[in-house]
Length: 169
Image (cartoon, rainbow, N blue to C red; front, side, top):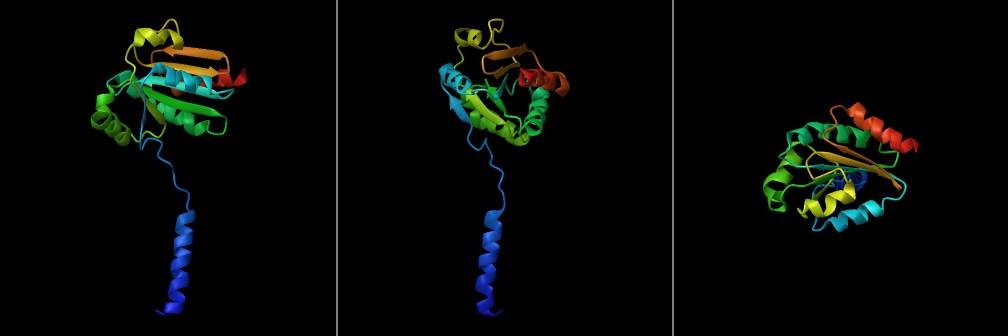
């Protein structure tokens, strides 16, 4: 091959490949929140967008069953200012042995944080006074408006209806 043609060819290939959009893996490093106050700061900073917080664990069958609903919600509502945040209450000591493998195996793309603060009685009332820490649980927030659901979303339509109601307000 002519070297005068080879160099421009390589440059074009490199430029094209660098311009391809790359999907960012939000869970390449899952953030660990030591105290509930760190999660409260995220809640306080959400502004007027809808924030969907799902509290779950890899040990919770109903949690695992409803996870696809949150995946679908995020993909269908990405243009409507809806942020889905999955808050794992798994033991942080199992982050490498259990949480990361679970996330990879199930191809979970939603943003995940592990809440290390296991003193549920100290902070569950801040989520909702009716909640005592059992899983799953979901809090949907928009501004000062809150909708809390204890237990799993059996169908995507149930979750969608709660989010739509919040978007309308």
